[in-house]
Image (cartoon, rainbow, N blue to C red; front, side, top):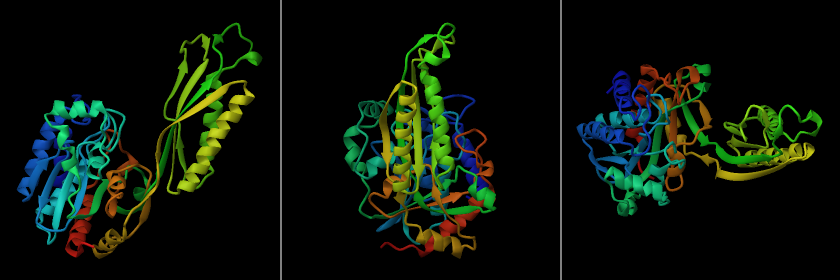
Length: 383
């Protein structure tokens, strides 16, 4: 398969969806049966022995002895594009189809996005010995026709010595630089919080402005601070992605406002300093308005350094410029890095668009990734 053929396969797989007219394929939803069947056929045609493990990961092994694992995920966010995750799986299969001189395992993870249960990385977590044992997840496994009792057998085989993931960038950096590929040297750490501002609901028409305790207005002031801190801290991104005002009537002053907070940076020290500044800022703003505020942590994911030297050498060998970059999004590589050296190679995202139906990739960039992968496999040897 070349770049055009890989893109064609990705678009065919995108038709396997929970919502006709949209690309939505969450963890072990019914369309995953068809995806497994289609991808498994490609794996076996490339000469791999295949199996589906107890959490729904499709895995194919080519050759014997110490091996390199190449993988990405099969699930999507709701109303997604055709390439996030699945492109990396199809590139891996195409590389095996070229009969590399080393053993390879292709891992097509059943879940990475966290869209169905709010828990990400269900697929790759099972491989590193920290499986998600939430009863809702276990029920989904049974409903799909798998047995959770086999989860311990999903662990990485000791013969797997390293991990490599190809993935669309999901951002505009490579396109702005005019580059097809980027070597990922780290995945940013993430802090996710829920912030709750408590004021007092009252009548919107009869309550003077100077005595109001408007929770939504307080949250809005704080959101401005979030934007300012992120814009003035190099490398930091911070987002308030959701906000809910209660009681939620147009003629009632909001007594409660609940906001999400997502803070990311490649340096845990910078991220934690910014997070503390924002949490203290919420307290200060609320106190000045006569409100109270509480916060609850939802996720604290440290930054992950990736082993990128081998990939960088392959990029150079294939004749492409080397550009190192940090991933602001989480990926399965950050989970596998807990156990084995893990690397990533980004492909340019036209328009910087991802998690959207307009997500795309250029065939020539896929061909560039294949060239790099082929050079890497020719040179790779287990540590």
